[in-house]
View 1 (cartoon, helix red, strand yellow):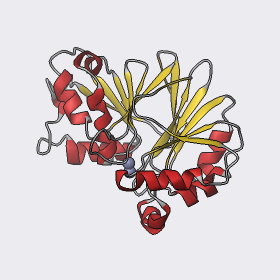
View 2 (spheres, helix red, strand yellow; view 1 turned 30 degrees about the horizontal axis):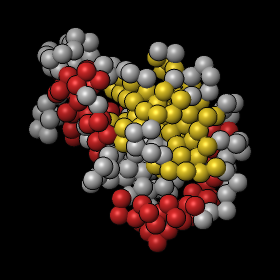
View 3 (spheres, helix red, strand yellow; view 1 turned 90 degrees about the vertical axis):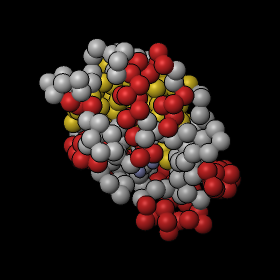
View 4 (cartoon, protein in one colour; view 1 turned 45 degrees about the vertical axis):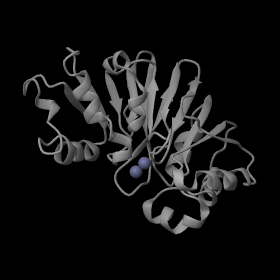
Length: 254
Ligand SMILES: [Zn+2]
Ligand SMILES: [Zn+2]
């Protein structure tokens, strides 16, 4: 299976796109501005969208995705998320004010947008890949995802500060191909990172002590203002793990 990195920045500007991954051809993991990298036929092929949480950098392109593919699709696009995430989308985004309620278009019975609540412990299997939520700790209800192909597994942390539950879940995965984990801020913003419940290199180093297996650690969600500084601080870490930045446009096979 392939995971294509459409966006993995913590902001925009220049070539920076916010979080979105294409899993195979029909599944999105988060729907940040990276979704705009897909061409029209690729957009029309999206059947499922798994959201880590409701923050805009992870859902920004979902409204325009639905609007763009609406006339070309017969089947709905299923959007998966925590019940709290779906409640935010219903109340604040697809509410007829900010954007039309696509769950009721073209009709209340057969909307192009179909919501599907998921929670820790649930697994959705699509095209031979299993997608399972992982615990995340953020300022609003959030999850990461575990992706299992027949060969191996990938983990995407979502926005989080880590935590023992997350590492216990990660360490239980037998063939972990890679760990995509956020480090939004540089160390001089450690206080802001703690308030915003994001990682900085110092807290990343602490959290990685919980990772027991050998795997590639792929850093995502760097804030553009400090991305160079943050990466230098990560490279300077005394870690036993192989750590590198996740690259927009790369495809990870697993
Ligand atoms: Zn967030
Ligand atoms: Zn974010």
